[in-house]
Structure formats: C-alpha cells, structure tokens
Length: 135
Image 1: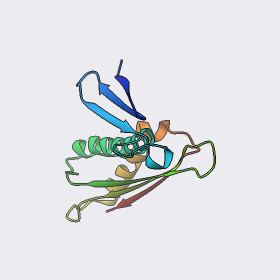
Image 2: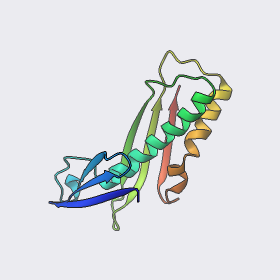
Image 3: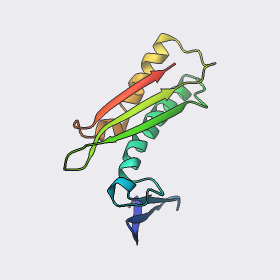
C-alpha cells in the first residue's frame, strides 16, 4: 500500500504516506461546500503535476551537473464550469533562477523531461496542460 486515507468529517481527509508517515490534510474547496483550509483533492492533482515535472527535470539536471535549486513552479488549476465537475486545465509556469545560464540543448531537454513526467503522461487528455518555461 502507498497511503491510508481517513475521513475526519466536515469534508476533510487525513492521508498518511505509509513509508514515511508524512500526512496531508485535504479539505473541500469553498466553491464546493468546503472550508478551503487545505489542499483540495483536485489541488493535489494539479500540484502533483508540477512536483512531478520538477522531479524529472531535477533527475536530468543532476545527471548534467546543473543546479536547479530555487527553480519555482506556479500552478493554477481551472475547473469546468459545467457538470460533471472536473479539472479542465492545469497551468504550469516554471520560473528558472535569473542567474542560471542554460544551453539551448539543456533547455530543450528540460522541457522534454517536464512533459514526459509520469503524472503528465497519466492525466486524461481531457485535461489541458498549459506549460510555460521561463528561462
């Protein structure tokens, strides 16, 4: 097993990663009857995309001796306006440090790494992935 999730009431869950015992609380968003006091499950999906992209770019960067420390990713999740309620688009803005100089080859490889991360490849084709790389 990967995780155990316990419903704690009031549209909130507590998920425990079993290998590390790290916990994540989720809360329904305010636009769907929740308090919005934590990541919603769909926020986690969008956030997982950015984290996965960064991780796979990080693997490439380690191999190439590139320091991606302080690279920042902004995530915007856009939900459908009609039923059924689901994620329509995830906007990913990847901001590389201003003092990082990357060759065109490395920029292309980092883009490829991001677009081929497991989460990006696992999401439904119905979810638009809009990704910007700001070198």
